[in-house]
Length: 442
Picture 1 (cartoon, rainbow, N blue to C red):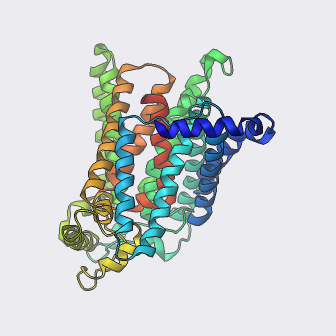
Picture 2 (cartoon, rainbow, N blue to C red; picture 1 turned 90 degrees about the vertical axis):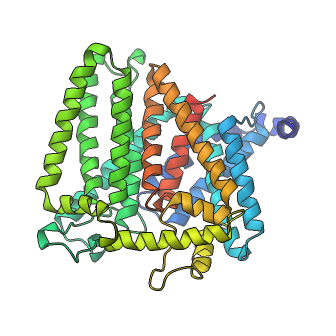
Picture 3 (cartoon, helix red, strand yellow; picture 1 turned 45 degrees about the horizontal axis):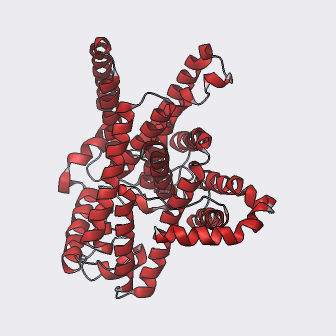
């Protein structure tokens, strides 16, 4: 690539600076620090604050690429489609009727993709940090779980009661928790927990016994710890009342069961099937016997009878009309840009901040070729991740599996909501894709 030739020439010029700079030689440590700050601050900080640390990681990565000899850009097939997507985003912004509003949304997209590039260039030289990234997510899940239980059993603000109660008895009303994620929203909290719960899969394997950090006989203790805290975090997800997160979690479990079944020895498959069947019956019994949870889940299938469902259908109809009128290049990036133009199409009384579907929103904002390119990027990553999991049996397989389940959960939830575009979930998404890229896709 001619781009790498230019970078190489810049590196040759700046090599003396790198060789004599203690800070530049420790720049990976600074990049890693900012990545971990993005993870931890996602639980408590405002979106702008999280974005600043992500941008700092991007800036440091640019400095690293320009000064450290041997650094270069390498794109696999999936990333070529990501590049195509990004180019169409640029074109859609340039042609937007609300250019300045769209430009603001574009800078967010640029930050997210820049963060993805930073993650790749950091992890390829620091693969040993991947397990600590998953551990950081586990700590965040435990932290949020504590607040979720406190909110559920203590006094919570009115925000936690978001649901259609017109057809519910008092015992069927669910107290919806929202954790500490800002802005406070049960759906955002549900999407966030959905994205990080798969990280608990890594806990039993977080210590490599070949390094004598932990005796192998203690590994079952880690399994118990992972199951215990993973179960508590799952309960916290359930307490959000986020139906999109429920659907996403169902698909995560389905994919996990399918992969485990595929990897099991033939003599163990029958036993595993029996255990899965027993677990399914137990969960079904809990759902049926818990009035509030039963009502919340059954409302998914209520169609227009449920006001939230009906609202989404009206928004979908308006957004489809927007797409038909702007199918080639879209209306431009960003939720502010979307809101201004959506007002021309919305049904009276059904104002919306987004399309409530990440694929429809991407198509509306950037056009048909952008959404096709992005879906292809996602599909290739998922395909390669599954292929890697089924053909490898080492520690890295667990990393890829946890990342894959996280991505599947987010993308499934995205069918009925757009909290995916919030920094807390978006940065998690690019971290997971980055892990798959570094470990599972060459």
